[in-house]
Image (cartoon, rainbow, N blue to C red; front, side, top):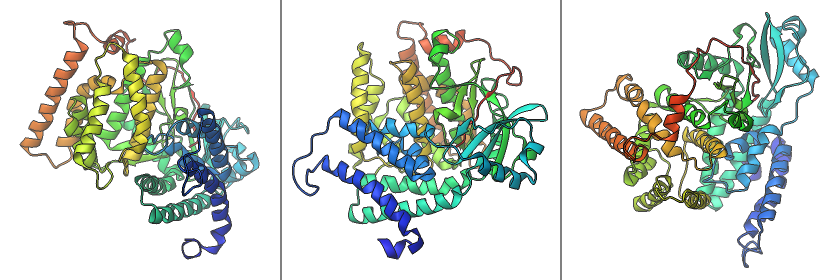
Length: 503
């Protein structure tokens, strides 16, 4: 691999990466073969797995911003990473050391053409957030509270080099071990490489933030920060300062009745369904630091550095797959997985249909012992690591959102079931989504596609009515929460503010 694919100047970094990762790989191999090539598996306790997960987090953080950012993506990939490693990787979001102020000040002076204190007022030298790619400081501009997001100095060549070396390592491994998991790692790397450069262009992020504000201007339950375009540069982004509580730290507000968990998850699902399926512009970095809830219970969406454009054909296939899952059509859902390119080459359609049927049975379990269904679901999620699933292109990031929504829902409701919550939301949005996918793009579908789609919706409606009104008119908890929620307030009112994320 080495000298033919890696420039000599990158060899020291390559050896550092290999020196960090190889011992971990050897440790994982010994889980199956004591002497690597032969022997019984080495016994591993849960405590051992937790210690090893902590070691992985520490070592990845030491390797720098590229590996921290990659870890954030892998933290949602149950098809590639088992527990407890998924949870450990998710903690890397908050473990990035800040950049010294003198380096931040130099970037601001170069970008603005003047010392920062001459451009903004009350600029706090201590960051309120430090991420793998950027760092956020609070300030005031023209009497408005703002946040100043600054690109980490020197991060771009570091990311370029590390992605190039990581791809060389994965390619070398795949050439000798062409396994579906190695291929999955390569897909993630390719998608990361495609979009991380966009994320380091703050002028592009400002444009995407403006775009999202325009598309959701009529949604009073959602807040998106205003952009200070006069101060925004490629390495500097200045946004309205919004205040709120991280979406994974709402226990006190929920206990006091200030926030309804069921309504919150519905807003999440509805917002991301509109992004992914209606607009084709998808906020692809939905970790809890980028999702807040303000004092009025509104969702605050931050950090638009990674916004993915989703082509119409992918949106259509995803919509049809979701409808098939809602109406418990295992064969149709499995076909959707194939159409979306999610299934490893050589996988039998019957095998995929059986796997999907298992998941749908769990999702729609009508047993009185909901806890038993949750135990079975947990087992299936553990087994997902061994399933023939590959998430291509945009679906890598869609999976992050699905994992976030599942995690938030389960955090506040131990009986949470994402499909049951999503079903009425998708029915409510059906006209809007059908217009975007089948009518407004200039390529209206044949009548047979319309009939099939409307038939799917009819089947979905029957399923939802049957399950949500089993006693002749008793509404679901989610429906009651929605109906009893406070009336929506216009997003332009109120004085709530929220801290920004740094990427």
